[in-house]
Amino acid sequence: MRSLDKLLLSRLGPVLAGGVAGVLAALLVTWGNPGNMGICVACFTRDISGALGLHRAAVVQYLRPEIAGLVLGAFGSALLFREFRPRSGSSPLVRFFLGFFAMVGALVFLGCPWRAYLRLAGGDWTAIAGIAGLSAGIGIGIGFLWKGFSLGKNSKNLHAAGYLMPLAAVAIMVLLVMAPLFGRDAQGTPVGPIFFSEKGPGSQHALLTVSLAVGLAVGWLAQRSRFCTVGALRDLFMLRDGHLFFGVLTFVLAAFATNLALGQFKPGLEGQPVAHTNHLWNFLGMTLAGLAFTLAGGCPGRQLILSGEGDGDAGVFVLGMLVGAGFAHNFSLASSAAGPSPYGPTAVTIGLVFCLAAGFLMRERLD
Image (cartoon, rainbow, N blue to C red; front, side):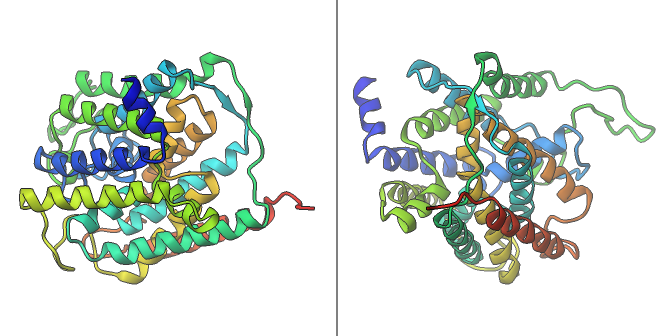
């Protein structure tokens, strides 16, 4: 255990974490998750939002154990290695709306940065525009960081505050196992409080125990190695430090090799699972997401990991994503396989305006 942890803390740590995560993500598709969606923090948070009744898109409602596992895996790792440090108080409302608009951008593209890379590893060439947009958004965010952008300093919290996100993850698992219902309507449709898809991506999932185990393992590895799909490009461009980037590269290559071995690599533009071919809005949706993630300090997976470590600011960002997913479907902002909705581009534009305004206005003076 000690030698493994030493490796994870070294510059090779993200490579190990990325390789394991890439293999497990591809295997989750074989085990039941939607195509090219072994682990997608945005999509899975969207499914949880629907399962909790925050939106009523019937095809994307499920309490994804992978999300709970990521938080709890990071929590366990942080406790064991004395890195559980509850803190919060750094521009919570701004972080909430950054999470909100990051989700809007991701759902216009149909995936977070993790899924963008997994789509590429599965042969979905429409992901290329999304990854280009992600890079552009991160580049804009780096420009603001160079100019002094800051959300301020957080402060130390009591330990009890740091337990909230891990407890929320436990609550998700309890609700998934219990699946409580308060009755049915006249047509026999369940009326909640927890909703589960009977068809579509929300109905496609691996066994609960398998999904949870993968989430716990990836959460542990990501916490120790600081694996981050957005931080990888940020550090590469801003600091000329590529050790996180090599972790992402290994993530893609491991998922590609596993997909190839399992017959899941299906190259092309048309007919890819839960994807569309509008390259402009694939690009711009992920530009918004990349910018929001960079301003907030990390990709959605990293935000979950930080929340498991007791970071309340990251928890606020995650809650913004959860609410953003509800809005995206209730207000018809999310894309479908047919392409962007009529309202999605407007929402992306509003999100870009918000993020650009935050970048320009929230700057510390650099003397």
